Image (cartoon, rainbow, N blue to C red; front, side, top):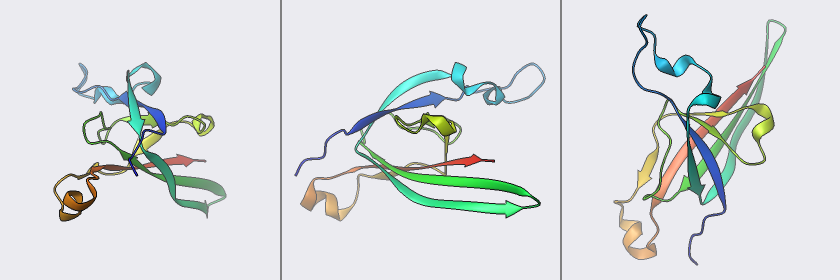
Length: 123
């Protein structure tokens, strides 16, 4: 069975550098950042939790995304929008992308790829 692209997400690339006051440039509106199409193999749920603290309800949704090695991948400061899940806003990248290209299973299955974890918090 061959892996195939099932959907295309959008990576919103965070600008690098600092402004004239010394603040990071990635604090502005993510909608204005550079957009990169991101072909992915699969998107699956990781966790979903609700916290109730001091009268506030915070909902955290987490996703696991598998994508090809040769394609683009989000950096830790980037934001990601997923088709069909736009209503809650963008997802942030949780940690560094995990690259699976140098492992013994690759020689048997011929599968290699990247796994990226995303999360979104809403109040």
